[in-house]
Image 1 (cartoon, protein in one colour):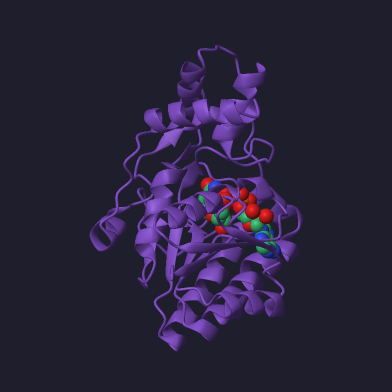
Image 2: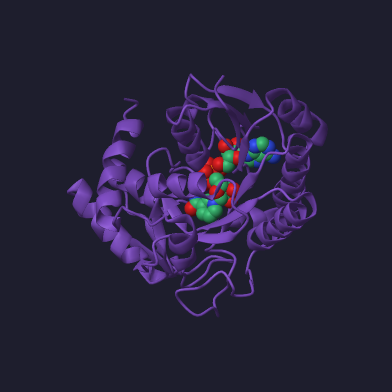
Length: 309
Ligand SMILES: NC(=O)c1ccc[n+]([C@@H]2O[C@H](COP(=O)([O-])OP(=O)(O)OC[C@H]3O[C@@H](n4cnc5c(N)ncnc54)[C@H](O)[C@@H]3O)[C@@H](O)[C@H]2O)c1
């Protein structure tokens, strides 16, 4: 019988790619998602989709006990910095209580958890770059705070249960299936503006930098981290400013549109770049996709999605 895995947030951007990779590796997969920002159409037909809110421990435990997964990938989250500033209570419910519920439920069946935290929103603006995992977090937003609190539960539950739960602190992830309709996900937003011929806003006047990492690389890191008990930055170690992202995407689209420049929004960082040497040493993982390859591939895939193909 095929081993089973659960992916929370499996109808989301990154989670749906994790579902695909697990299916390709021969797992039977259950995606758990409340569809608040996810889309059932992203979930592969071969996977089971269970619609539930991870804040509801009883409902979550019932699925975990039924499925008896060998591994859990916990990606369900309130994942927007701006929404976390507007509604920090709900952000805390989903990202802290929801994460506690996932590690609680995992203990009932002895399944290790991989938790997706954030490298961008966690370390704050004062951190040396590239930032290593040993830097004490100083988040600027409720989202960063809730992810840090979620990490604490994952690590504490790992110590007390002896289960090897891993924390992966992701850089700025981009790729196919990212929604252009939120306030985050600058690559998808820019791609949609290029596709529809509209000028985007470049917050921070185009100068903020991020560590952009292709979703396929993130998925392989998450799979490599399953069954490990460390905390790993998952990014590229390369800093790219937002003007460059716009320029490279414009080249991929073959279009020239003058962007609008705007001030940075509350809770946003000016710079972010992660030290990825620990993941290289301990997981044998390294991002394979350069930003220009990844952006070109993403633009082509997103255009197909915009056209409903
Ligand atoms: N995209 C990035 O650049 C990035 C960077 C750092 C960390 N992360 C983390 O990676 C994970 C996936 O992010 P994403 O970009 O795919 O976001 P996403 O919004 O596409 O996916 C999150 C999924 O979780 C689901 N969800 C939200 N609240 C839920 C709840 N209470 N119960 C069940 N399901 C719920 C949503 O419906 C959605 O499908 C998140 O934990 C996010 O914090 C993402």
